[in-house]
Length: 181
Image (cartoon, rainbow, N blue to C red; front, side, top):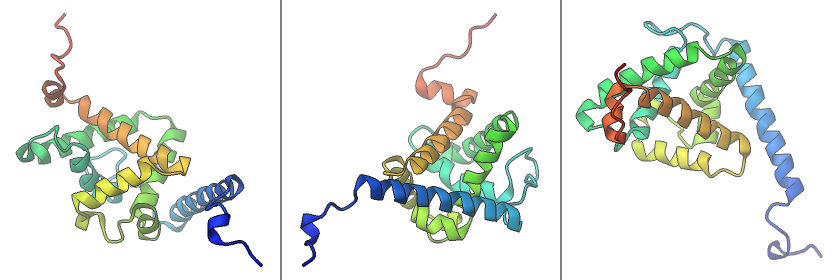
């Protein structure tokens, strides 16, 4: 007789390691497949040095959710555009290896085949609601998979550094600005 479900643990340590390894292999394969198949364009969008058109679709949906509460609704379009410019500038100064990893993260989030299962956003980013994006961010932040937690941390750090390097963000956090020399 086989043990009942309540007698067996939901996921053993070995099972978790196998699952994590499988998920890592899936993400790496998806990123590599996107870059080899041409789904991942390396051509920067018009007016940007690094960010591609597909990246902009994702980031234009993500940034307003991340800046919610820090920017007045009327100022959000300007804040998003400025944050994208700063993010692009920051990415342009990354090492080639870090840039490649960041673009792979953006590729995984941009491809429909990986976006749905990993984020819960099955449609395009432009049609995702703020609540859906917040749920995706919470899901990744609290994931049992370290790879997803690292992805959340990377997104958060990239966007927040790009936003808080802008002069318009300083008043919200109480920073008077650099001293005048």
